[in-house]
Image (cartoon, rainbow, N blue to C red; front, side, top):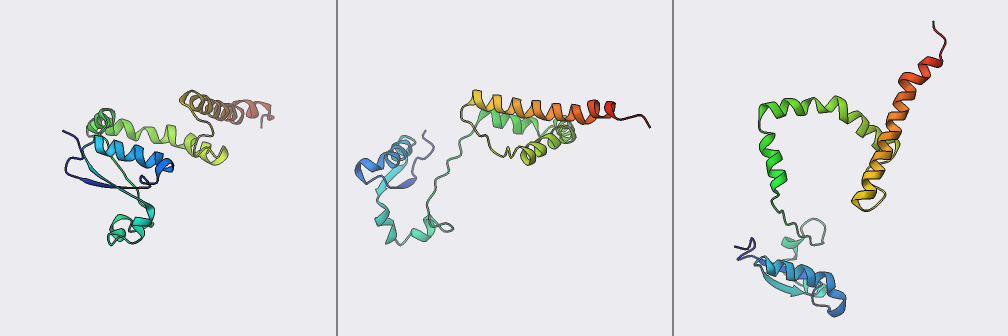
Length: 148
């Protein structure tokens, strides 16, 4: 049974001919999920009495479809167990400092490349740089200082 059976989806920008490629894709995807699809132009929305309900905050419409994931569901089930909660608490001192450091020093709040292979390479470079700097700070630099 499709997830959107009995729901009505209003797709703006799907009624403008050739420029409506993205709106058409959304409309077809929603219809495939069982929704009744209404195509509308942006000018139609300007005079619609339901405009405030469609876009109360930003004035722009957005669609969020949350699809269940077996991997995420499995993670949530494991995290309900006390042994996994205790194990997860140990992660903080080990992982959070390097992550914060990468964000601050490398401005690595988002990746600068596209594609999984390139992203993995970028994170490896960041980890290598972090580890080298820690090595210099903890091992190499103290060895150069005269003994007190």
